[in-house]
Image (cartoon, rainbow, N blue to C red; front, side, top):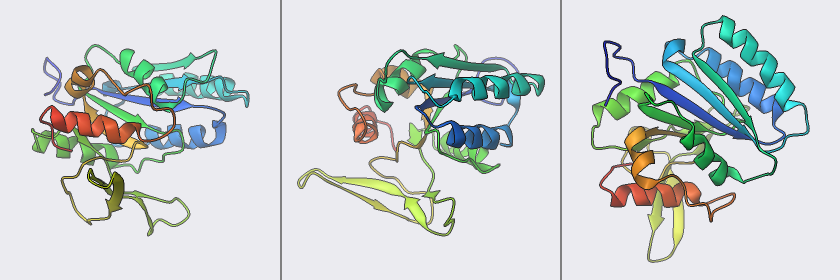
Amino acid sequence: MISKGRNTNPFISIVIPTLNGKKDLVNCLNSIRRVEYPKKRMEIIIWDNGSTDGTQGEVGGMFMEMEKEGWKVLNMIQSEENLGVYTSRDELFKRVNAETDYVLSIDDDVFLPGDSLNILIKCLQKHSDAGIIGPRTVYDIKPNETAHGAGFVNLWLGRYSETDAGSLIECDYVIGCCMLIKREVVSKLKGFDRDYYTSHGEVDFCLRAKKKGYKI
């Protein structure tokens, strides 16, 4: 699914929850500024859960610079209370652009390599039956060491496991720090289960997507 009209580049909404993560968030935003994708086909929406470390001022200044660079929509929403990561993501999902094709949901400490977004988009476009895709993630100080890979669930034992397959693989879930999600999946699932506060929400989200017929 791509946006209507002549533009063949899908519109991407990048959504980021944050709380007192100014330094990491600045690095995250700077990495997004360098991704190899048209700026006018992306928006960034940040949900701030009541930061007290100067995040709002720092991001506000960065957004002013990014607007001069040609970014389409930059928005930071300040919450009066800490809603937790999954409720924050739900609130962000509600605010994505009407023309959004894919939602890139990332944590504020994620650093995106320049070609990463294009790779994820092309994978979802190639595999039309997939609804969610995630990358292999690595540690910034140990780039050769895998932080998270493809996730699997043993429903009999109630256990999770991850594997670094080294290539594209169908799995049960992808780690929540970086998920590219089709807009239709977000709409059909009505977001994350808000009963989850800091963990397990992405597992539930992906399993519900699989029940709807989407591959992960």
